[in-house]
Image (cartoon, rainbow, N blue to C red; front, side, top):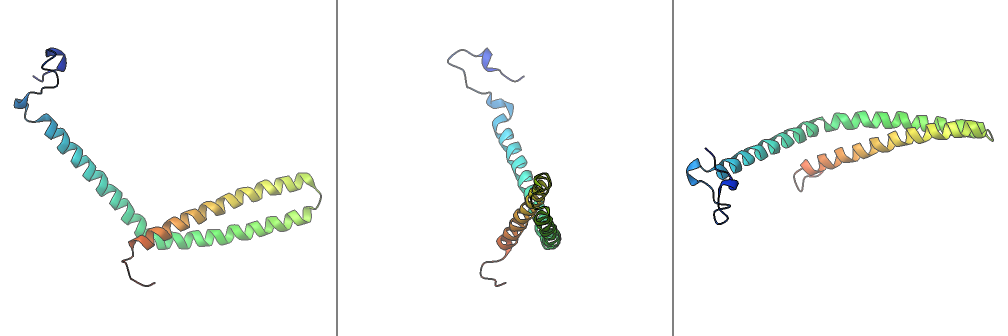
Length: 126
């Protein structure tokens, strides 16, 4: 039966039953095993992302090209709208949404490039 701190006198508090098989060591071993498992899972995810990075970058590049073409179309439409404030506001909101998507894709692209660069051996040329 495990001992509880409440059953001890003030002088005995914090003393553990050493016959219990080393509960503290068991919990440390479980924690270490859990940490090792988490580290393996993170490494597996990193490797998976690393192997998919070149294809993902190519996909992002084509999406960015399409969105930048869309931005040019919106800019042209804004020039055509002239003094139509309502139309300009509508086009401005649309442009802002497209620009946010482009910015997000560029951020993801940069992250993937950094991942690829970090995986390259030091001194290898590219």
